[in-house]
Image (cartoon, rainbow, N blue to C red; front, side):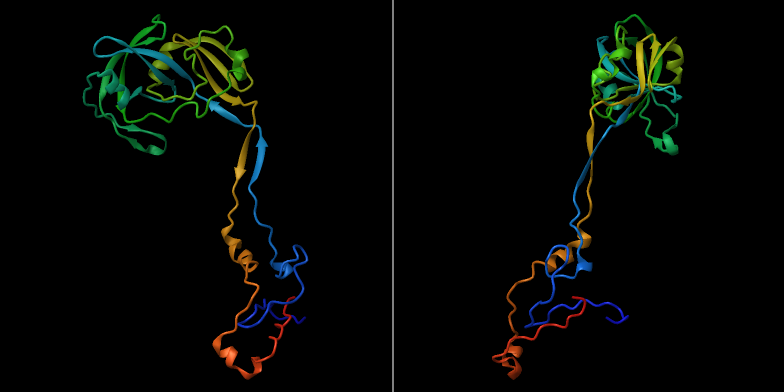
Length: 265
């Protein structure tokens, strides 16, 4: 075969596809065109998730009835926050606030006002008054997925946890910033692998990377569209029909179509 550009010969009207089959699959295309159909591949691997510190707190609503809320303890925030939904649930009065609240990347967050309230620990032993800025949403449910309790059994055993349901994915109603964190912090700290238990006046908070014992498959989907036309060639009709012009041609009467040029076959 010459050194010119390679060409793929396909049958014209009235011609049959002929020649050696693909060496890989024995179908009627050139071996160089053979491509395995992409498959969905599952990889079972160990994975970890990050647990952020949460606490179960009590706030009195407008009628002085206690309501239990779930708080994220975040010493990286300069202010404390409450969601609009939680504020409406408590029916607490807000005042206008001109404080500008920025998230990561200096993204501005809508400030729907400010309220002052007393926050109590879940057992009522600790209480303090603070200001909460009202914003539409603090974060997605935390943790992102439920965590097996057995994973942190050694670290949590015998401790009065600030959030006994720390392992369940649930909505966050309040964010307690650095102003509150400095107030509730106590000295005792324990560590297990990449996890930390920190004692606070609200109870022990837990945070860090949790290594999950159960492996979950990670699926990689490969796009089939790029190879669609190659595989459609395999479904070409077996029978080739002559066009009216070919049927009237003297050369085609009583003759079998000549095989196509060999090309790359």
